[in-house]
Length: 322
Image 1 (tube, rainbow, N blue to C red):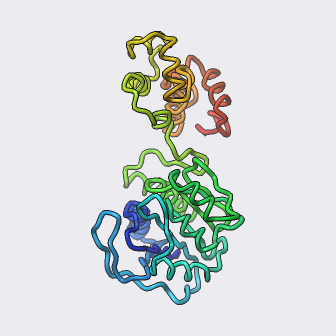
Image 2 (cartoon, rainbow, N blue to C red; image 1 turned 180 degrees about the vertical axis):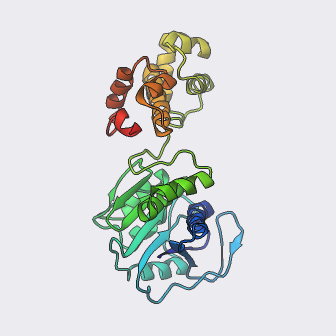
Image 3 (cartoon, helix red, strand yellow; image 1 turned 30 degrees about the vertical axis):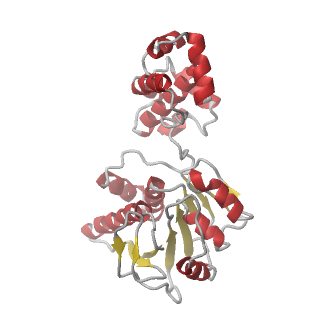
C-alpha cells in the first residue's frame, strides 16, 4: 500500500488537492469492490490542525506533521496557494519547510509530488536543486529564482525527475495523479478512474500545459477573436485568408497584420495549429491517422504528418494512435 500525504498550508488551493485525492479514493474503492486490498491510504497533514482553504471554507482534523515516516512507500504532495508569489515567511510554512528538509527522497520509497506553486515550496526547502521541475506558468520565473540549481521546464503538464514529480497546477494535478495510478496499479485501473471522473482526455508528461485552443488568445481585439472562434469551432472548413478576413470585415492583408500584431502568429499558421490540436485529440480518442486527418480538416495523412513535424511534436501520428 502507498501512503499519500497531502501537506496543507493555510489557503491551500482546494482544486490542487481535492481532485487528486478523489482519484485515489475512487481507485481504492474500485479495488475493494473487486475483492482486493486498497492500493492507497490518504493522510491529510499540516502545521495547524485546521486552516482555511483558497475558497474560504475551512478544513479541520488535519494530522500534525509526522515525526518519522513509517516503513513503506510514501508520496508527499505539496500544493499551491493563491497569489502572485509563494512566500515562505509565515510560521506554518517555515515549520513545513523544516520538515521537508529532513526527507530522504528515493524512487520507490519516499517520493515528492508538487502541484501548481507547490514546486516553489519544494524549492524553498532545497528539494529541487539539480532537478528538472515545472509549475504553473504564472510561477515559472519565481521557481527559477527560488530554486537555484533547478532546471525549470516550461509549458508541460507534468515533469518527472527521479523521485520528484511536479505539475503545472490545478487540473494538471489530476493528470499527474491518474498517470501515477496507472504506473502503480496498471493502466486499466487508471482508465476506469478517469472514466468514473468523466475525464475523457488525459494528458501526459510531453503534453503542453497551455492548450492550443487557448494559445494566441491573450488579446482584446473582438474581430480577431471572432475569426479564432470560427476556426476553432469548424477547423475542417475550407478556410482561406480571404474567408477569415470576410468574417472580420477587413481585407486579407489587414487581417494578416492583425494576427501578427495581436496573436503573434500568421492566420494560416494558426489554422494549422488548431487542426493539429484537433487531430491529436482524435488520435487519443482511438481514431486512426486517416480519420484524425479528415476530422481536423487536413487534406491527407501526409499534410497531417508535415504539420506534426513543422510544430516539432515528438513521435509520429501513427505512434500516437498505436
